[in-house]
Amino acid sequence: MLQRSNRSNRSLFPAAVLLLAFALRLFRLTAQSFWYDEGFTVYFAKMPLGEQLAALQVVSPIPFHYLLVSGWMRLAGESPYVLRYLSVMGSVLAVGLCYRLGRELGGPRVGLLAALGLTLSPMHIYYAQEVRTYGWLSALMLASALLLQRVPRGLSWKETLALGIVQALTLLAHIYSAFTLLALNLLLLGIFLLRRGPWETIRPWLLANGISLLLTAPWFWAARQTAISTALYFRGTVPLPTLLWQMVQAFSVGEASPTLWQGALLFLALAVLALLVALWQRLEWPWRFALTGALAPVVGILLASLERTRYTSRYTIAALPFFFLLFAMSWHALWKRWRPVGAAYGLLLLLLFGYMGLGGYNQFYDPAFFRPDFRAVSGYIQEHGDPAQDGIVLVGGHFHPILRYFLGETFALYPMPDNIIHNVDDPLNYRDLATLNEAAAQHRRLWLVLWQRELADPAGMVLDQLVGHTLRHIVFGEFGEIDLLLFEMPQAGVTFDTDPTPQMPLAHEWPGRVALRGYTLEPGATVNRGQPLHLTLFWRALAEMDEDFFASVQLIGADGQLYAQADHIAYNDFYPSSQWRAGEELLDRYQLDLPSALPPGRYQLILVLYDRAGSRWLTPERREFVELVAGIEIK
Image (cartoon, rainbow, N blue to C red):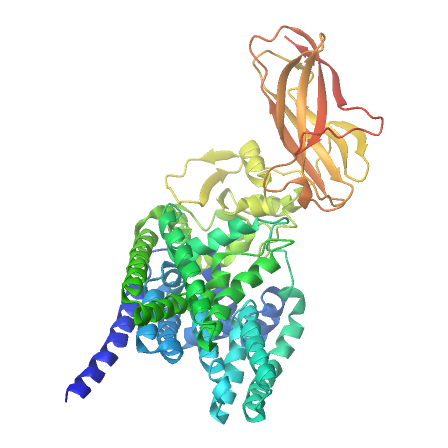
């Protein structure tokens, strides 16, 4: 009777952890708005199957979740609660699989503690409440790992078939899952080489991988260009220590809690201690397996980011359960060998759980870390707009699916650019103002929605054009990181210039780098003291550059002294010269504030270019500056 009671208690604890995981992931499930990523998912999921697969080959190499959502929508509907509930199920399943994997690697206590850590993880909760692949990716990765760790003792034919299918689904859930699956399979290969068999164990493993390859190779071949695309990522790199710290923060207290650095530091300390315990345990099979699962995604992301950073924290979510498995295994090993040391490690782990709780609280209640509120923006437009006379201009245009999700077909949308995903290598240029001309010709008022405009319109071209040529109305509302503005077209109509030309043409070149085509100066060559000078430089990139340059516009008096100056990185920080494409033309604006005490007289306006180290770029004539205006009259 006592034995039966103990068994009942042991099964009660995992059930309680699963119930807690379910409750935390359902809590405030729709308190935050649907946002771009979720609108992106729904946009493709609503397509007919053939059209969906053809489109995904062009924009996303990971079809699993889109197909899953597509089927779920047809079964349960497409409300935010229903769609996010699907992600909750995947995340809770991951918690259950984490328990099972921990139990097979180290026993019931290990499984329970690891599952509890994953249950409380702010990162795991966050992506359980989003209509994206990451909750199900965790579940699929853990299912693959559960089967892979059984390979050394031999797989049944059912397990072999399951491993082949689950590995394929994991790869189709996210391409970066290949880092973990490849590493775990290489670990198994090393074991087989050392043991030299047996063939009875190797054969099912090879068959399972053959099934995975057969199921995924045709798709990845068709989507190969999308799989290797870097258009989503800015050129350049983030220092690797910075990337590592961002990962540690996400794994521990979540991205909504950068001030809880103590929790991130504690996570890092526990990871280092777990590595030491693994070495003390002579890296036996369970430790090698868990270490490989934890480190493979991290190392893979770092290697992929050596030339161009390809990182967001969610890409490493597959590593998260393995870290909690390592922590649980370390506690269990220390507790069995040295109770006081095990107790101390356990207290540190409980303290980490406390910090994780604070991080989760921030995710739920701190508006500074909420998802962009497209729901509120759409609601405001519906309340104050008129579909008969209003159009909506979107900068950047890649988020149009989420506006369409909330607004339906009632308003005309004008995405700028008209792309489903942003491309940091191809920002808006003046030719794209043709879309704005089309909207202005069709509507008396234009709503302008700005989000991630530094990606699509880093110079603020669209906003400048509307502010300069239309009447702006006040919008009463705060929408976080989304800007909403309203403009009324003039009675006489307006046409935006799609091919601006410089007021003063020039032909200055810095060979192999950039050319200055000319400039426009307002109010002109005669200006009053205290009045600002507005200068627009017309650049053409002669080649792709590996460096960023700065431009300094300087007002020089007849005495050779510097009286006013405006410096900034050419174009702006969001689109510096290291990202310009050969042949690209850009308009670069400067404002020169003239002191009110400036002596009247004639002045010279010059341009100096220099790099980040402060070294000046010389003209072909070996001069350090270019003269823009020989005589500006200051009154």
